[in-house]
Image (tube, rainbow, N blue to C red):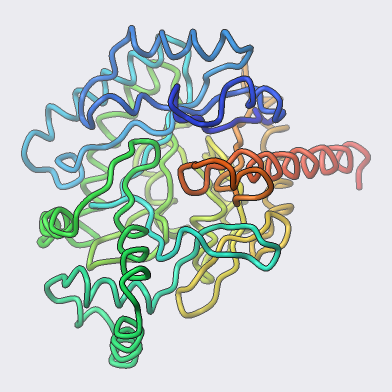
Length: 396
């Protein structure tokens, strides 16, 4: 069976563990956000977090995320030390029977949006990405060297007109949406810091960056295997190059290259339907079928997207992603694993970003991590799963 899970940012999360119990989730997805990036997660702090979660009647089986230090991504500075620390963190997690570790290899910044508070037709609030707006930010606000050359003339013209028409409030909203840092850390960057992070990649193209990831995998996958951990790399969000930076987890070809680097069940994918689904060029049902044997973690959300690199989050059952088809593919994979893997525990799945709905407006949540919006998504995921499993059992 799927392991119905809920992302929780720790004791400071406005969603309490007692509330999570009532959502139908049985497992927590969390991380030690208080530990600085690159440092070893202390065994005693892992144990304390696990005991806190288990006291509520939930389990902690999935980490999201163990951050990968920029030195590792660029193979510069103290990268050897940080790889050793990452390996030791895996050891410490494995010894506490935490067997799924999500991580990402996005350069410089995590996920990118141009609006974190779009008002949907039903009154809910969610996030979106407009390519022209991002170009305006890149060229006119961030003022990245060489930015103009990254965009066609027509895009530069539209971006300029758009930026000129923004008042100070909207400019601040655009900047804040862009600068928001890693989920759960409370961290955000200045424009100057972003330029510094981007500059570290000036001599790193896609091939070099993939090579850096592959070298990293060859060092951490054996440790994960020994500790019984399934690694699950998260796709780029959005899944195309931004800010002149390389992207290596955006397509089916990328994912296949990654899992073939070290052919092991421990070297897997977080299949995020929203991240992969933001690109109209990604055929998600085919991707799910091709990658199913190495999908170690499922993130389920939906988007609407177009051919101009714009996308907006949508109700789970209403977007451009065939969520039901992907869930069916993964149920079939789950049933196969039950037959062939000893002590198999199930594929963890969680509702990804949820809209702000209902009483969510009374509280302040990290964007995308509301209570009621995610509760709705989890209920729909569980309903789809139950119906599909029954249909499969009945031969329909």
